[in-house]
Length: 347
Image (cartoon, rainbow, N blue to C red; front, side, top):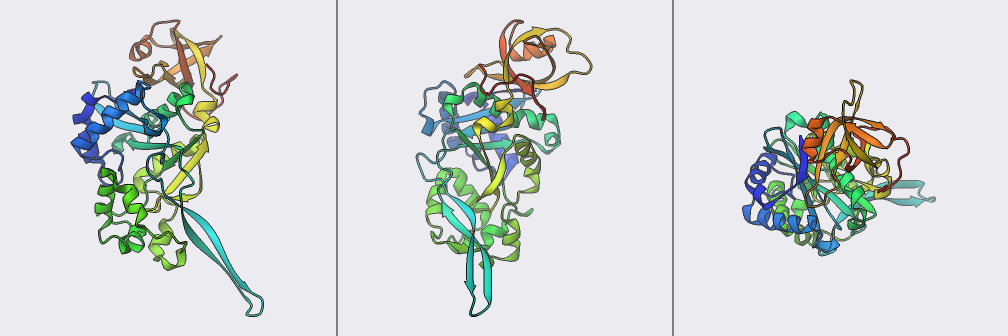
């Protein structure tokens, strides 16, 4: 498997993935016109020709035959061109000594607190790959790229996890809240956000604090939870030290995870090493390896062994990276585990 930068030439493959992904993947819309505009901006972003506020990175996962089977991406600085809304979970307390009353009410506050963060997005894999190291590769490749080009990203990274919805696409959170302000079902609202109408819809939502007790029981239960299809992605984000801090998506109530960029494991533990071609050994651990390219970036997961400032990989792994022996690469252990001598943002 190989992770590389998406190209305009990938549009038909990506359209097929977008259709298969269905509702929930709003940043990969099944619209050829909108997807083409995004891919054009993606190419300019990888070339470093786009302002931080407009930068958009999309990676594709290729299988052994060169077929595109998955995606992941990130927005360089979310909310700098149009508002980025979230609900922050807070607490409202009402108390009276005379009446012997003390009540705590979970409360939703509409905020723009996460504006300017680098936002992970567009993570999609077919079900058969989601519980494997392939999922770690396509998800964590983004962090290794950010470690290499740290100046192109925000100091805070967030990811809005897909919230709960049923097999017919109904969201209990939307049904209990959003649909009262928009006479449409969740699937339609989800589609419109994918078409670029998220800020408009958000601005029509109530600005005043909302008591969670007014929501249905199913909606309350959905707050801060994730869709079953996103549980593997949640676990991977948590492996990288991303945590839920009380922010949720305004449409489906899904959890937003966040972390300082410098504290993300694949960033802080990554190292620049010289590539060596050899035999990693039967006990070699899988490493995430980046050729340090930007527009021509290539990343793989492969068994490797560190030895005296080098990273020993097989010839096949070096060929997938398009590199020769002695070339610097950035690498980190694919799974949790400290890499000895690692330095944050080591060049």
